[in-house]
Image: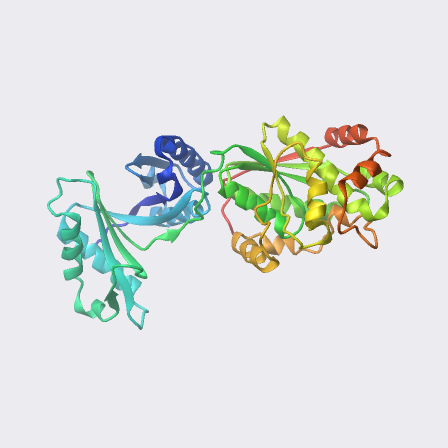
Length: 410
C-alpha cells in the first residue's frame, strides 16, 4: 500500500427530501440542478442519483492539476446548497476487504496523529452491491478488528453519538471509504416551493431572513430602496455586497434597487410626522408586491421581529402588512438580536451588515415615531398622497442587478 488511493467521489445526503414520497424525485432533480449551478465555476462535475443518495465526481479528473484538492473545494461549496444535510469526500478502492481495511487504517492514522485523548468512533458500512462477500455487519466487524493497537490507544468505540464515523459504501463498481461527515445547511432545494421577494435593508436581520426563505425552498429575489441625494453611493455599494453574499445559496439572484426619495419627500411634506416610518414601509410593501407579481412571486419576506424596533410592534406590523397584496413571511419573528447575529456571523453577512452606512428609513426620521399605529390613521394620512403616481415612478426607475451562484466563500 505504498501508493494509497486518492479521493475521487463526494457522497451527498439529504434529510427532508426523503419524506416527500411520490414527489421526492422532483425535489431531487431540483437539488441536483442547484448543486450543478453552485459548483460549475470550480470544475465539471457528474452528479448521479441512486437509492436515496447523490454522488458527485469530477467528469475529467485527469484534467485537474490536483483532483483531491478540487474535490475538497467542491465539498465545501456543496455545504452551502440548501437541501443537503451532509457531505463526505470518499476514497475509491477495490472491493477487497483487506484493501478497504488498509485504507481505513491509513486514514485513521493521519486523522489521529495529533489527538491526545480518546476519540469515540463507529464503523458504518452500507452494501449496495449485494454480491459483495461480506454483509454490512460483517464488514463493520472486519474493519474494526483490524485497526492496529497503536490506533486503539486513541479510539473508543461508540455506536450512538460517536465523534468520528468510519464510513464504507460498497457499490457495484467500487467501494468508497470516508472519515466523517461535513454538515450541510439542511432545508429544501431552492426553487422547489416557488418564488418570493425579500425586502433587503442594510441591517443584520433582512439578509438572515432571505437566507431562511431560501433554506425553505423559495427562490428569493431581493428588493432594496435608495434615496439619493439623502443616501449616497456607499449605501448602494453595501446593498450590492450583501446581495452578492446571499446569492451563494441559490442558482440565480436578482437585486432590485428602487428609487424612494420622492415617496419620502411626499410623506414628509403631506403626512403626520409620527407615522413617517410606517408609511414608508407601507409603500415598500406595495412596491415589493408589484415586483414579486411581475416575476410570479407568491410572497414577500421581511426581517421583522416582534418588538425589536418601534415599527415592529404588533399594531405597526399589522398597519404595514395591510398594504401588501401578497402574504408576508417573517422567518425571524421570534428571534432576539443575539440569535439573528449568530446566524449572520455563520453565513458571512454580519461584517457587511455592520458597515456604518445609513439605510433609507433613516431619512426624515421623526423625533417621536408612532409605536402603536392605527390602520385608519394610515389610510387617512395617505389620502393626501398620489399613491399610484408615486408607485409608478418608483417602479419605472428600478435598477436590476443579477448574480450567479458559482462564487465560493472567501
